[in-house]
Image (cartoon, rainbow, N blue to C red; front, side, top):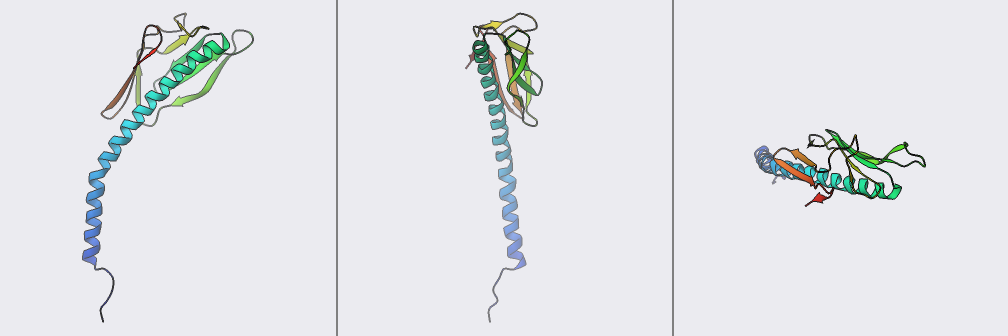
Length: 149
């Protein structure tokens, strides 16, 4: 009678082949993850920048895009009387290990959606760099307050 099944040697060869495949594809997967995480962070920043401009025009008051070291968010004066500040949408936290650096801590827009440099706002010409591993994505804001592609 012939026995069915696999031998220990056959099992070890399969495990070895799977290990080699995993070892060669893991760096590719990590590289793709890093690239996508940086791209997503930059896209979310661009979206928040557009949100800040549109919220300023919607409420007819100043809106600010705050830029921290690990997060960014939009605040606007939304009250009937000046001075009531709300966070618009949600605070966007960067994915783990994604680094963000900016030459400006806050970008503001006036009621017409134009850049405002009234204190505590920064000049509108900002450069924000997102990085993870070997991947970087730079978002440049022009002196006119527009995202440059």
